[in-house]
Length: 171
Image (tube, rainbow, N blue to C red):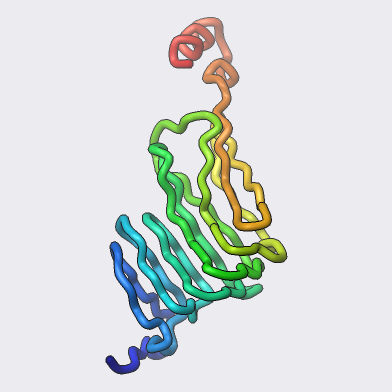
């Protein structure tokens, strides 16, 4: 029930699984990391670097992203993703990074990586993963941001007739 000090240097508050923490008790933390399934609720988010690997990090207030800040969301082949949910207005700025976990993705899958009552502004930079057959695109709406995956045919990366036949089989 006291203050938690991160100290000098770069400090990360780890929020694992489900729970609640009075984030007003955090001092000198530069980043927050949400891991594990479930929803972790904070009354406010006092950091400028946020990463959600799995589950939902729920901020029960408005949140203004720092121009120097970064939000990193992880997406998974099974359709799940890390979600930052803001119960209020999300004022976007800084960087958005999306990390795709290894695996087989289904074409057209949408990942709601940011949900809010209202999303204002835009991220300064959006860094999306990709490969020869995977293309990720972001779409900002009035109440958040989705990332969608487009999966090209395996035949599109074939150079020979044999590779085309294998690509057609894999498709």
